[in-house]
Length: 112
Image (tube, rainbow, N blue to C red):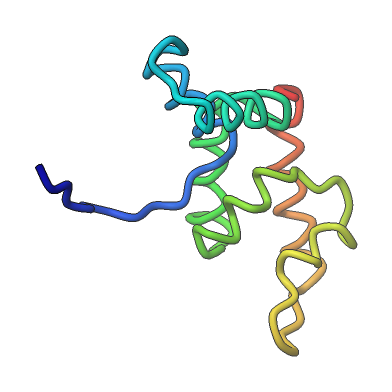
């Protein structure tokens, strides 16, 4: 039976962990177990919070979804750390926008 790919969507590490847990650990192969272990250790916030934060970063900050996923995965704490994710070409991101993004991250940081 051939499988058909319906959609490609970037997801956060915490969402990966939630998906794998939902499959049941007894049903996972060796690679999936290692992936779950990694995702559990390196998740910064809950899957629910990461979904809300992603939505806010895309809608309010105007970020590309793939960049927003990387930011949520790493949860940078300062402007210089955040600039790494947004440094594409010679485009300069205003400090006020970076501060707004950090304030969104701080809103969810208690979930760490």
